[in-house]
Image 1 (cartoon, rainbow, N blue to C red):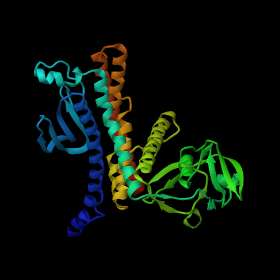
Image 2: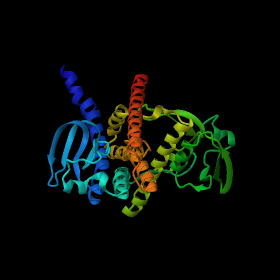
Image 3: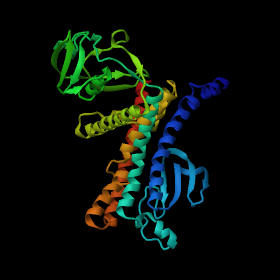
Image 4: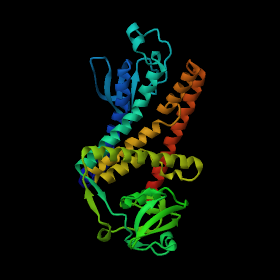
Length: 382
């Protein structure tokens, strides 16, 4: 029994090794998302009744001087801001409510212009993207970034790189006309383009050579044993010949790099989602709370910098997820507001009601599917 308790609370145990990092990453990302809604909503003159991190019964909370109840709830799998006039946490409009005072009527969400409502809704995902930029900027300016020269140290036997004639010592100059500055530029470009021919310009003994390379799709494992599929061409870069180093940057340069890094994660995540619908990508990489908790615990072993980096990536993912055009999500609300702006009047209540029902069903199905993936991954790993 003592060994069980000791293991449970050890740095490698469930409490400190998995649960605490998971809650740290998820709750801070959720808080940022909801804070975006809240701040822009207040700026637009919309009153807020509840600001909750988590769902279900309240764990702790307090009322501010504006009458908003700030609370932490028992189920830490999301959050919400309930504005004046909202029927529920999904911001489904309550319609006319005779119980509202004249002051509350003036602050009611549904009584504001479509532009103010849209800005308030969009502010949540936008806050997630801004948060990621802030994290990346901090990491790059304080800790620097690991880089390596775009030099081929080794060519794997029977790889596509060997087949087209790429040799050790070759240096990447460009891929599909895009200049290459470091080895990771090539890795990132190739990873999502399996099966697509890529024009690579290489430098060999001062001479420029052009190769057409089609990456193959292979399953790889990270340091924690997590499996994923991506495109590779079969070249490696080692510390001896690759010039591995840590480069440090000023705040301005770090900010520019952070914006590019955020854009890259958005592009890659969006491309993966689009690939699922087109049949190009497998949906087995969609994960739920179990996988996020597992990854948080794994990344936490690498230190706070790695954990904050994961928080940035998760923040971007949550921002993108909420922008999907599904009713009950922020993107679904924005679609309704778009048609409202075109029509000059709100979308009919019955249409919205059916939309919200379908949206709830889709989100519930996605949660079940993600949980199934998580469980299958755990069982497969064991």
